Length: 70
Image (cartoon, rainbow, N blue to C red; front, top):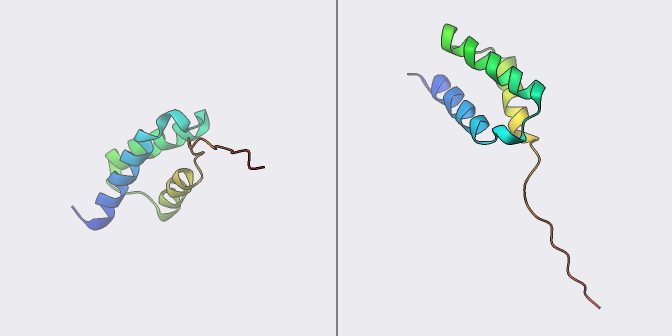
């Protein structure tokens, strides 16, 4: 396996972990990319970039805490 293939698999793993935060359209795109990757063993640079952007812009689950400083 080359380095690019490993990076793509890691990307799919990370997206799987955040599956609950994805929109329906994002899930469809990821599913389509996954099927394409399984069939062709490669993705285009544009597909990889979009998958990375999906991960990058996911909402965070961090709770914001405010303190009352008076």
